[in-house]
Image (cartoon, rainbow, N blue to C red; front, side, top):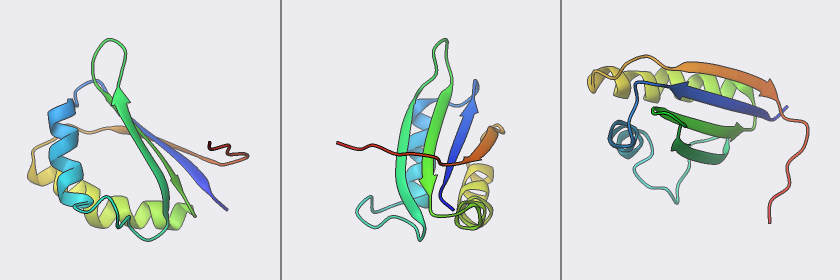
Length: 93
């Protein structure tokens, strides 16, 4: 079942996000196994948010555990909140 994953932190910046994404997805034309889409944007009032669509929660969890968390720890990044839900519908132009 596809899932929507939402990550946010008032303590992350564009620069920290970019440093992390450069490590975990060095080639944007070669997405990690199971990733369908990835979006990132600033939060109103400061901070950063990421919205991903994954083929399954298992794909998402493995990517977070094996790549994102180690990269964030290496960069001394603050923690972020994560919420997941099953995806009901998707419309893309």
